[in-house]
Length: 172
Image (cartoon, rainbow, N blue to C red; front, side, top):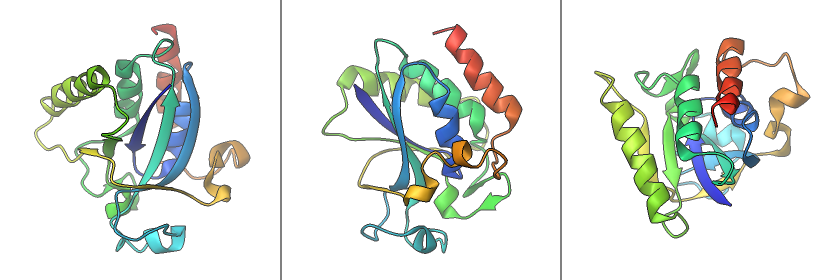
């Protein structure tokens, strides 16, 4: 198994999108790369912890490519929006791709970097980060699989974007 971390605005929709992909074995929403140890949602939403709402995505690279994961991510975000996605505004909603430098396979990291820089070249403004993971703290239980528990819950990711992500299974 391999793991990447994706900050795609509000983590509810980002988590749901990745859960639609064959080869993704687990998802967990949480808070990444901030300076407050083990923060709560209430702390993170104040935008003063440095944390990003993030999804840890565990996947089987023999069943899903890094390219497919990154395609799904960029379907669901607007990399030209700084510190937010849709109506969700604040640095906790900044987009990013994070990896554990101690655990990532060098080949996988090169694939991530190549895709990232290719995507970055398509945009005049580009605010999505690519950084090593400093820390990740799991979010409160009520945030895990939120859109499964609350199918009509708010989400900046549209039904059309979820459908586009689901279609990626046909190409894997």
